[in-house]
Image 1 (tube, rainbow, N blue to C red):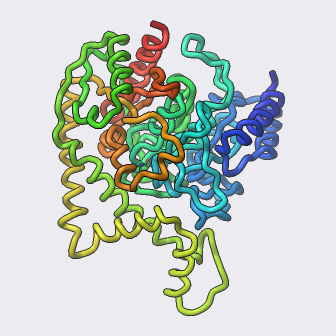
Image 2: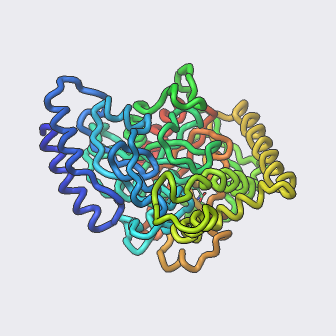
Image 3: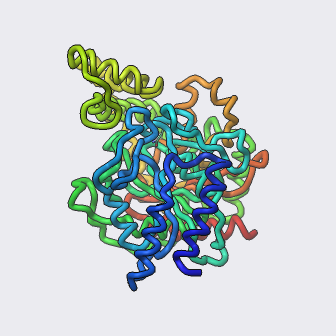
Length: 459
Ligand code: GLN
């Protein structure tokens, strides 16, 4: 099939998928056709030649609306591309649309969206969430057809670019039964990513298999002069994984049936493991929500109705104008995080909350560092529950939702690379296995991930 033909086929599929699962905020058919023509004319064949790419809507795309899932940015059209977008285009990837997400990444179920922004549905059961905050990417990755399997690693047809601060790639990947890859902090440039929490944000990938997620990741890896926190990495060959650790604290609160599926998959891999305890993880969720909201509340101060997004007729004083815009366009969850984040870094309280959270983060980083001297990888369930129904989510309190990040927050807080790999089903819904490796050791992570994937699927 020519690139023009495969793009037309993908556009047709895109319409069907989006009608059923509402996973896109914006679809970019004309842009995709134009790119397909350009690729046909140019003789160059890049690493993503003709592959359809969907992009989480907090990654800036020149001339294409980028909302970050928030009503305050519902009409924002960036004048530049994020570095990851430039790299994808250089390698021949074709961007087909922007996927829906929780506003600014604030959520686990993709239900915290601004007015006019769709809530995606889980392709395995449309009465359930597709996870969050990258719920649109998860649903799209599960729904697009593919001829690439674990056994025959053919060229993928669709891949998705997503982002995680505290678990936003793992949650939708696990709930939708696809592979989600979150890189080490600094491996991928954040230039052009709309900030949630700068010290935690990482752009990653999703695909049907580990190889697919890796293929897109390899294109976006690398130092970028436009992002000072991006790193030059000396590639080391993948280690052979001889011993792994399972951390007891990351099994707490996990649904019994998911635990059974988890232990069964460990047995299938036959990898020697030790069960250990990391007591500092008890404070991981609390520490994350203090640090993440402190940074988010500061980042969100730029949305005042003057420079970006929502604007109205200016009247009264600046304070009145800013307040009216922010009151009107920020959602309940955005306001909750601004209030919490501002509080924890207020002069009188910062020692008690923000600085203490930073110390806990340091301690957790240190503890992981020691673990990787003894173990080659860590394993846990990806999420403590299967994808919940929308009517169940509406009954949960914010603090109960935050607590469901107990498996995903540890590697995100410690900036460690991790994968979520589908391992089976519980009550007809997919469940995932989370694999964590040492910082910047993506090579081991991908190789080990592929090994697990084939052992678990084919036994
Ligand atoms: N659920 C977490 C939060 O709401 C993580 C989201 C993310 O990684 N963007 O902060």
